[in-house]
Length: 284
Image 1 (cartoon, rainbow, N blue to C red):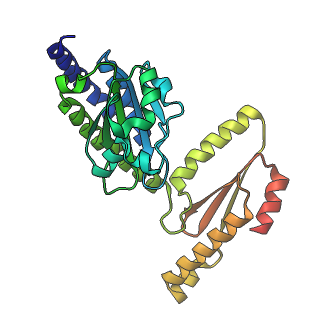
Image 2 (image 1 turned 45 degrees about the vertical axis):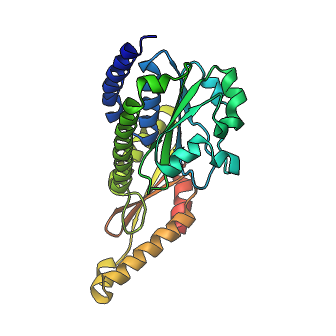
Image 3 (image 1 turned 180 degrees about the vertical axis):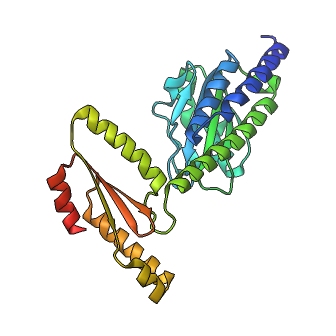
């Protein structure tokens, strides 16, 4: 293998792949795209797998893998045992540094060696993804079928790619957070009007297709303005919170509830006819 040509191909492929990372809409989607890009960048890369979660409190299990040796990850677990904690994956996250492992000789890899050899894995590189101060983090692990591969190619292009994946992961996480914030009423933690309108549209379309009943209950608080004027907005907010809690306990788990605006609340009752909706409304 001509390593200089391989290195050029790696850089070119990973540079192209950065565009794919930027298009990731979810944290999981970002790391999946990274794994696919890494495997596509070289024939020598026979496996790339990812993990996304809270490694400080749970076993690490690959949630996605790409490459011809993907079967290796089927039963792979990096638990919280002393041996696993010394392994490259856990060590990489703890130190927030890439860790290079030689499958045949690295003592810290002994737990997984037999299975790795069976699938032709020679070297591995673990790359931590995400903010080390954030409990929710990711890990990408790359395996190749050639000894001394990373020494010849260098780990720099993969580290640079991991850093770009970290940026893309943070952007995707922020996007999800903003979408959640945009859908939630900050006082009651119920859905807001914007989010509920989408649910109404989907529910109505489903009711038309399935010919199943679909009911909506809109209710408000009488003389709420008088309460606010006489007792202050803090008391008014407490009343709104109390009403929202009572409504959540009254409705079924299949129902939807939102703060429609001000002192108005709206509930969607799937698969519920008029009589059923009236019975629920009487309890609200």
